Length: 149
Image (cartoon, rainbow, N blue to C red):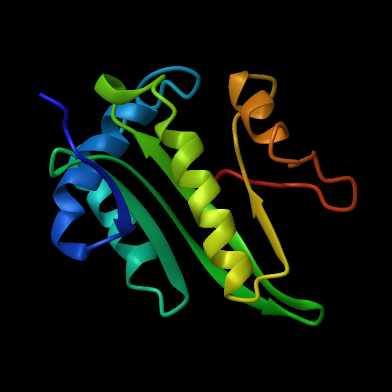
């Protein structure tokens, strides 16, 4: 049986499924983070509740298999978009779902007048190669800095 595949806007009613996908995806390579679904749910809900949030979900046979989510912000040169999360459930990885979600998101935000897009990803992994195929490059003018408290 062929399962119908659909890309559509994220829906807050699927928050628990997004959280399960996020926790499963980011607990594996290359991140190996120890996400709990309840913490992932809070993380995703906070992004979705932003007035400038935009995201898409990928459905296979009516079940959410992956999603992409981010927010936009206005700068002096125009509005930019930050991809906060792109996650595909491990059972559906390596099927091109991330590519389809990213393609559609980039098309949608360009049509909305977004002038640039950025993201943070694990360095020197298959993810830098994946995003590199879309023209993403390491920033030369900015540095990500952090401090543990």
